[in-house]
Image (cartoon, rainbow, N blue to C red; front, side, top):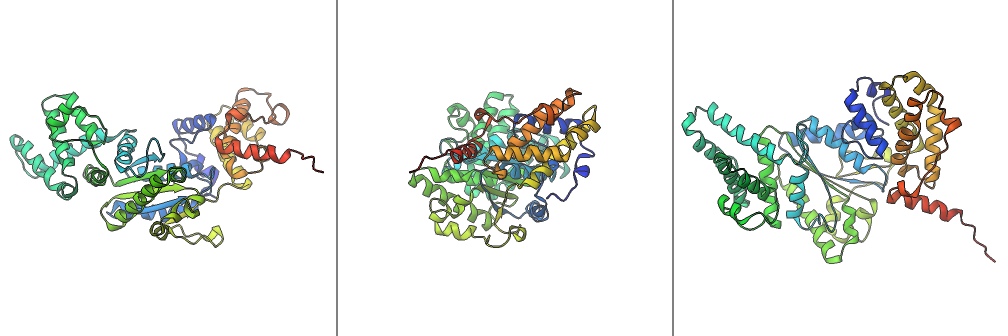
Length: 446
């Protein structure tokens, strides 16, 4: 369970945060913000993860793998960690791995998605341009602080740019070249060229040849250049005041469904990323991947590449209560009925804080009512409570709490019966529901 009581978590929530959380749950989505309010069952990880974020902010680099079945809360976990990172002034990028959109073995595409999804506490994706602009502002301020006269400021900024990207330029000299081209275009008021050069810096293909020539760069970013560009981005983030960068590579288990040659390349790319992180090449980087147990343990996943399996090996033979949160892999056990009820009571209390009738909401939708709804939703999904949170919270907010809030004579025990339509279920929920229906078929055996 969470280390915080529901009352403590909901007592000081702002109207905006409450609205964001409730609106997202009503849609059946994971909220973008306010996840600390819903962090049931994550208390065991907090101290270790916070210590790792602090180490990264001090110049270390960390790799972490999260394992959990579908519906166990991996997306919630990564966004919860992202919120904690942003509170420490990290930049965050969540990237969905897929064969068609973001194949892991094409690191240039992964880098492009990184820049597209880059977010900070002050800027939503893509925050690349604000970050770069803040970096140039910092260089100017540093030059002025060092005593550079106004008329020599461009030359001093160029000197600082060269010095601070010296290590990056050993591997990816075009990163610094593109930044110079971007600044040059801005200085002449050529916004179109500046935007195009920044797009190239973000890994976008098919940037106009004229813009590339103007900036002095050639071609498109390739697989090997992408790692250098990540290094450059980390330098820019650090110099512009950010503590580090959290990158989430979500749903890496999709690698199991691609062609064997692409799968082998992707697994080797993951091994390469882990080794680069551990080598110290990326100070300020926290790299997190998520996948199912089948991906980590099955022959079509990590075990297909023994060096990768060795790097990710973690002992999960003990009681989950004694899992080591400092290990390279973390295990999400998913929800039980009790933890689902605990989450439901938290949501009810959050909802009640913004209602005109908070006492009636807590009275009508009491803990027993919430347990009955959680049991019913779990039953509709074949008894698989672990995959029920999304649907349960959607029903709790949209079907029960909204009605109690709006209709003074509505009583869920009298006026509501759970209905579950196939078109409102996710793929995982449909599979659980289908398994239930299959179990109900009576076979006429001789």
